[in-house]
Image (cartoon, rainbow, N blue to C red; front, top):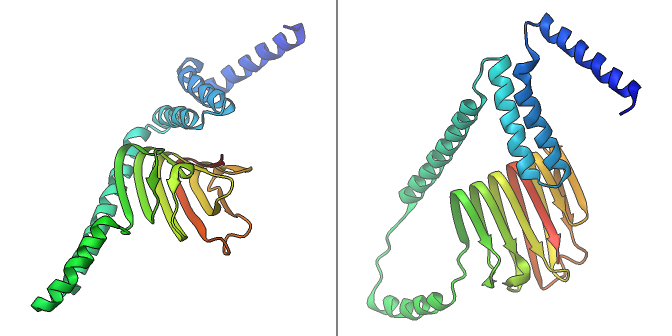
Length: 249
């Protein structure tokens, strides 16, 4: 190490020590937050965005508790609990409204006979949208499967979707993936027509060759000839805190 660099570090440390003393703070109490923020920067540079975000949240927890005497982790958990509670209340209200407007129609024997073959046909050809919800865990679609309209909501964890392994029907298929904290990864084949809307409140969004990070980054990309394609997929991807990645294979 050069002598000039060493002297500069010593002077900077002395200056920081005087600054902390003026606010009645000690440098020793800031070693922990410093380690966490350095780990966050290290993992961010290595491409491990989720680990970087995790250490950054720990850093904020320690700093808020030390400077403002606020337990950031408890505040965060409270926010998560309120968020889930409101979502459950809203979904419950929607179900109640549906029950109010439901009407039971009487059918005669001939109508029932006509309905029986339709029910048998739908049992083998289920075109109903896929709805999947998970509070904590991993949602994985990387095996062969038949793609249809789907909505996936995951609280904390990762969502992986490999469209190169999917059987894609004719027309437009809409896939909605929402996450609270974690990572959303979607892999698409090069010859598939897609329209992508990706966003996050805090984190990183990477779609094909474009990448944005920070607060509220979002990307909208549509491949050439999307509307004219006989098979096309519309992707609506979002997280509150984390990463959204769409890669071509």
